[in-house]
Length: 262
Length: 343
Image (cartoon, rainbow over all chains, first blue to last red; front, side, top):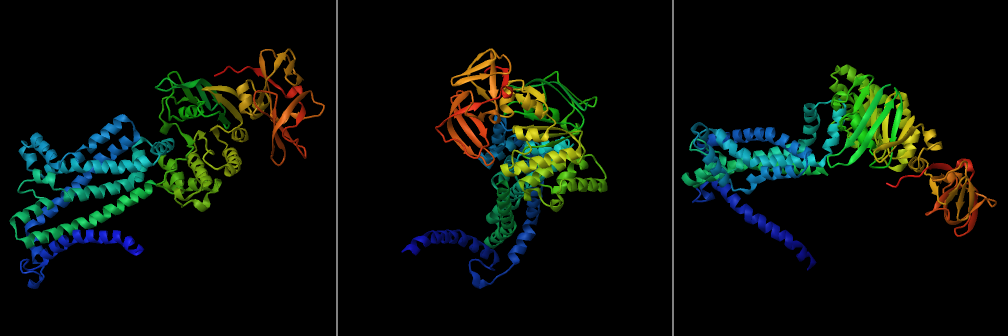
């Protein structure tokens, strides 16, 4: 009797995993079968993946490029912002922090519309990849700021900086020698989050993209809408291969940052 | 004169006067302690000297004739040991100690040589390559001192450097720190709330109370000739005797003590080691508590003031609580000081 009550949570968990995994496995298999409607008996093939590569490699590279550019922007904007917020705790900082986090609460759709209204008429900008980048930076910046801020808030930054100052370090040296190295776990966790989110972002990007500027998830939607199911499924597989290692690295880095904060 | 402080004061934005205008002169190689209870302004004074806090207008901080009042902390060339040590967790022991030298842009071999020298002096050889997070409290304290000393600062400032250690270690490190500071021969200012620390380490002690220096002098002078009740209470734990003062006599409820000089309108204090049990003594009291402390007993006595008065008794046995005893206090041991104005 006792063993049954004990195993119920396990059974529920396994059922939930099964429920989530079956469609994924099915989709992956669909991308590898010769003909989905005839099932596995039609044989396995990698040709659909080849087809995806031929059709959408541009999207893959654009997404990687955007993610890296987005990372660079969030590092340059987010780390100093988190530092400024950590050094000046107070009501104004809290309000600013909430303000930076606002894009998390607003649907990507609304954010994209706002961007289109404001900048949509600048044709050169509208057609350029940097237009999507602006959206991605807006959306991912709060994750970088919060991740770095939580690590900085856990160390006695003020006294560490006073220590460095008493040894002759000017403010710029203190930032490079003391602030950045000690914030590194938070920066790493934030960076992986930013890259993962940027590669996977759909809502906002869907609104901002142009036919010549398709990112990975936008391409996925496109392939489901206009290609054979096998091609779209192979695309899903490619997407998984790119995003799952990033996701795992992100989890590892966040757990590490949490540990250091204690 | 190495360091001259003139008219240093600090008023916080909310109007709190943390430090009233204070002057202080510190000679080369002298170790001065700022001693006082928390909130007396001693840390504020130290932080102003370091340049970590800006003093009110009109202050002047002069080092060997060079006015540094307007200089930021990083150019003042002062070493600082923080209460929490503020060691850089991202650097090894060597990295921490060498940081100040790196900021001076010294060539690498010279940095290495000077770091080695300080490591040897502070007996940190076994830990040189370790991460600072892997050190004990006492070792961290030595690294903090070594790091502050390595760039050869003009003055070393120490902000409660022993207070984050546990009691057993504190006593041992206090003597070690005193020895190291003498060895370095450096001018040092040392903030503490612990009178034993101040006495053990400093050449001169400035006792601070409510934002002012109440008295400054050698540990002996402060102990033997306090100029006010606060200093007498804080240094050596003097206790007030409450009775009627009539010219050269103090009338207590249980007897009369003769005073060394007329003391009308003043207060009379006594220290525990000056109260002696004596069957022939002129005053009486009741024993309330007895604590055995190894070398002596600490006896709490009622009937001489508003609270308990403590006497140190070094006999082989002590009277039982509840018994009545007679006491003597030699007139010379009584401290006669102006009455403290209630704060």
